[in-house]
Image: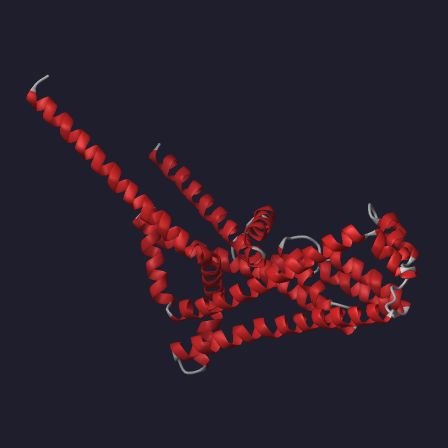
Length: 363
């Protein structure tokens, strides 16, 4: 072997080692940075989503108060926090008050469970067993609690865990709203940065296209899925509040979760209606049931109305995103997951179509 080939081999080995060390250090730094920011990924993502979805309204607010960007962002943040905190306090008070009343009546021996209606037997899958346990609880609560002690303990443990998770989610929502206030105040600069990032990841001509597509998708899904879910949950909560349903706030939250997950709210409102039938007169109970059915089917005309303003993302994608996001990050993941997966789907389809068109043109 000649001296020149030996030198080239040594240089290659040194360069390979040096490149491997650099890559390892970069990977170490990237992994470390990722672990540091992991707790903030979901709140920041939700903050970005809120900022993008609310920006058209922010511009109107800014114009209405004389064009002050800083004042408009502060006012938006305060109003958004009020919209979050007010219903949260109301729902919390509903749950606490109901829990206190039930506990006081149980200790005093005056707690009564209304007897179920005979129609409960006809409910599919769970009708017979539910009627049996409900009837036992209405006749002898002590015996029912003793008989279903394991299930009651498991339910109580799950409920406490869910409430703790909900408290953490509310805190994340507060942080996200503050972050969104910062983003809307600096929207033009953020828009240019996103274009630069996507241009580097794709190409210069596609950067703005993908950025605009991302904005349209976020606004579309935020309006057509989250907006509709909030409307359904709000009207459901109002109806249960008027009918004085115990723990109406908790049921409202359950309706919101189902609506975002693309499941019919009647799955919750049906049980609530059965309770209303058992404790009130027939006429108001029937009116409440019709009201609940209208709420449950309202997404049939609301979603096309809102989704028609942006991208037409398959509902299956949104369903998988909502459920996956909730499993990964709790309640806030329910919101973020639906939008992020829809965004990923739209960007992938745009890239795929762009690739196909480019190949066809080159043929």
